[in-house]
Length: 411
Ligand SMILES: NC(=O)C1=CN([C@@H]2O[C@H](COP(=O)(O)OP(=O)(O)OC[C@H]3O[C@@H](n4cnc5c(N)ncnc54)[C@H](OP(=O)(O)O)[C@@H]3O)[C@@H](O)[C@H]2O)C=CC1
Ligand SMILES: O=C(O)CCC(=O)C(=O)O
Image (cartoon, rainbow, N blue to C red):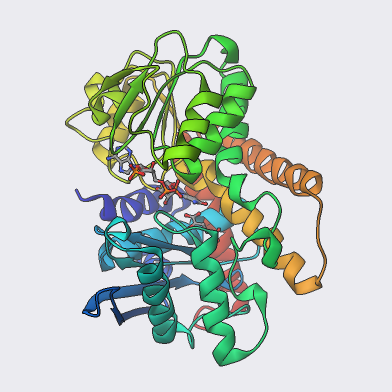
């Protein structure tokens, strides 16, 4: 099974629990709208490059659609469709008033200069500006994009529609962004890791942890967990896996990332092939990069007792079943990485009220939102005697179904 088919598989598992009819399943699975646009721009050397840009709007029964934009060579319609649906269940599980969407461009951003990325981003907005907006569909960062792209998107969209920073979240703090959005996904991953360990009766300071991916999510999760005294023994990016069984000096690794833009060249650790990170002898494994990385081919070698899914869709269904049988606890993506969209919601609220929250307030509300959702998912899992992923999907689907019915099924 491809990573892009996993969301539907997990949906069906939970739909079974809820006794959903076939027609309700089809309604909840079918995206509202899918758009594919040409994204053409001039390179620095005067040639024209053309790529495909995608936006899938999955569901809006609980509010405007919401979800990030990914710039990555593997982006295609199947991946975006699956990630858009995941956003619907994610916003529902943390109970924020949004639906789900996702988008992206099938491109390797590392092959482009910043100026080329800016021209490409503006061309993408030219193609999708009339289907996004503060009350309809609000994009945000995901893999390969950050606050800078969000700033260009806002600027280009406002050329068509006038001032309205709530059209996009994850903006620079100086330009209507929220304090704490950049760290939010990783911080949420950290908060939920600590909660899970406590629930499992494991002492944080003796839980050896490995984090795959050291971008926005992985690096902020590492910082938070290091400060919470968890020994982070391995981190990785495309350049390899950096391992120290006694615990990495995370502030030094973060400084290296800031100076060099990647882990490449970090010397105070043993360098292993990137994929080795997943099967190291650790207590906690945090995949925070691509989807589909835990599969039939490596699941038997995984030694962690707790997997915290910081990436979207890191575990394929066959591996998920094997982990369950092996007694490994898996905290699912739709809960674990929901800190990002939660603080995006806080940013949107601030933009709409022309008001600014302090970093303390953002952090407190983030903690409260994630803690409530964690408790609800854990209780649902205990009450129904089901795994945490199915419990999270059950909660989310029930909320979306209820909103759909209240509005009138085909409204
Ligand atoms: N940003 C956000 O707010 C949110 C992100 N997510 C999810 O979290 C995940 C990470 O996103 P984000 O941190 O924003 O992305 P970034 O683009 O900031 O970072 C991605 C990281 O993953 C690394 N990576 C890519 N491929 C591999 C690989 N094969 N092995 C090891 N490392 C790899 C990259 O390495 P390199 O730099 O060397 O390419 C980079 O360190 C994605 O699944 C995303 O959908 C979920 C919710 C919100
Ligand atoms: O912040 C957001 O709106 C969405 C982030 C995102 O794409 C995700 O949670 O996967």
